[in-house]
Image (cartoon, rainbow over all chains, first blue to last red; front, side):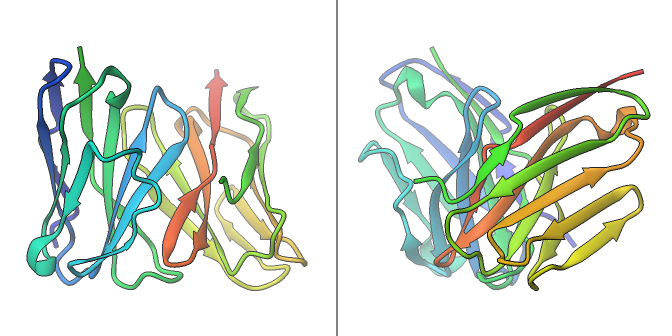
Length: 114
Length: 109
């Protein structure tokens, strides 16, 4: 069974540019999460999808971030325009059901904004 | 705001010494999960605790959930260099999984 896959693994962009990150969850997992880890610090929650619906987007830092999950399968996270403080590792995770089940993480996308 | 407080932030031990990280919450938790992230890697699920006072063991790792379900601990006996990484506790907030700030463990041989 394929795990959670994320693309790209690394991205270096200039301030002001746009970047789109993609996450393919484990097949059959309705719950999809986006997280960000900055400078080896805490894993900060960004948002949570249940199928194609945004269940909780309280962690999204501002309106430069847009997440979608059309059709309830893969998800994209777009940053437009990117700022220096957006640099970090963006993790996607999926779980079969939201409450009390193990979350499987992807390898992450390391985003560097210069 | 942060759901759980995790301490210490960093811990360095000599190989063979024990290690403990703690998670504390001001509110009762429905459950708590523990994850490990190796340097350069991604978080990997270790275990979930649900019941008050629950204790679970995985080889040299012992996980506890407090009687009041407001705190949890992870204890590693006789650390090895393979134990290095950051250990995170995570708790449910609504339907979302919220992580503590993690404890980064380094081990010298």
